[in-house]
Length: 141
Image (cartoon, rainbow, N blue to C red; front, side, top):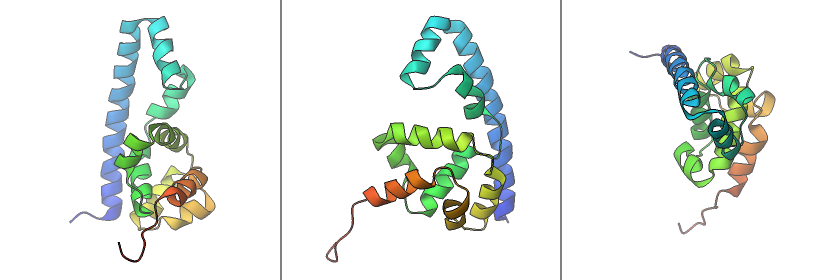
C-alpha cells in the first residue's frame, strides 16, 4: 500500500535522478552546439545560464508539486502547458526556485492545496489569475 508520504518520497527520488540526468544532458548538449547557439536557445526560452541550476536542481519534484497543486485547485497542467506555455514556464521557474518545497510536498500529501496558496506559494497570484480566467459553466451546461 502506498502512503501519500511514501509516494512523495518516491517522487523525490525519481526527481533527483531525472534532475541529475537533465543537468548532465543539458551540459553535453550545450557543449555540442556551441556557445552562440546555446545563447540563442536560452534567449528564445527567456532563460539565462544562471537559471539552469535552479530549474534542474534536485529537490522533491517542483514539476510534480506544481502539477499536484494545479490539479488540486481544478486546473489541468497539460492544458496549461500547451495553451499557455509562457505562463506555465514562469510557474515552473518560480516553483523550481521555491524554498518552501518541503512544506508544499507535506501539504499536498495531505490533500491541502489551499494553505500554500494563502501563506507561502510564490505562484499563488498566477494560479489565482488562471482560476479567474476559466470559463464559467451556466446552469444548463
